Image (cartoon, rainbow, N blue to C red; front, side, top):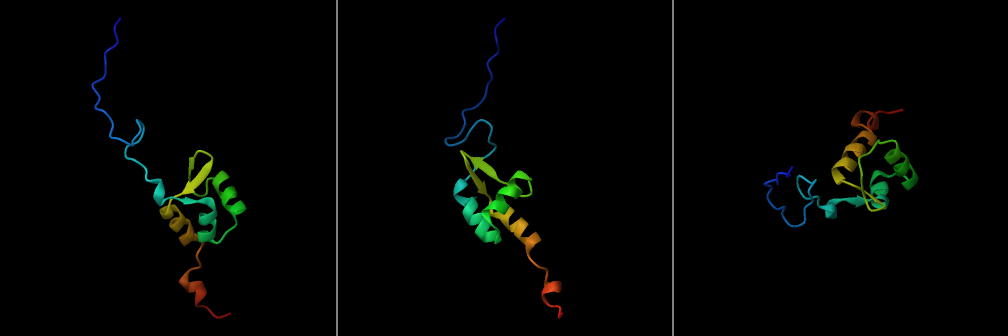
Length: 88
């Protein structure tokens, strides 16, 4: 029985078969910079990665973080205006 060949178009240069659009890793941040931006230790960041508390992507053996995800986590960590203005 002969197999039917698919009529797919060739992919644009620089993309993979599974990607919907190319990912620009030049925007992404390495662990050291991400920890500094969040003002936490690299160990805490690793714990958050393993607990899936922060989104990341592995490229080889390096974990990269998107700035939008760092901003999202940072806004949760930042003290609110209400607490910053109260007198104790």
